Image (cartoon, rainbow, N blue to C red; front, side, top):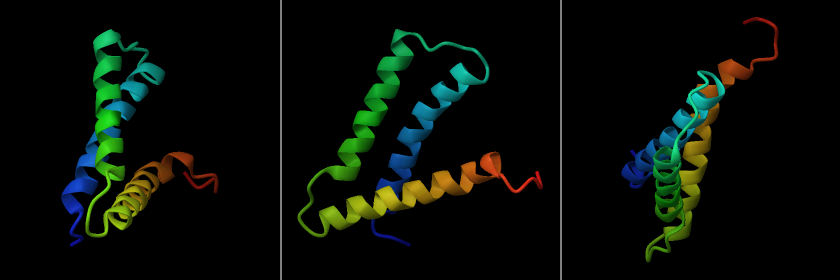
Length: 88
């Protein structure tokens, strides 16, 4: 396991919060209110802080690893939704 697993998991959680509101609005038609927007903005601010905060030992590398791993997680979970091969 990566030394940054907890950080990567927290970043994934923050993105999940934001994307949940976006999904609810776009798919279910439930428009987020002011508190929802503030909460998801706060979660995204936390994501950015966790990913890009300067760290003494390998901080930039850990942030890049967290970003890459989070991108991989999103691609793995979202790829079936965007499969253009016609074999859905």
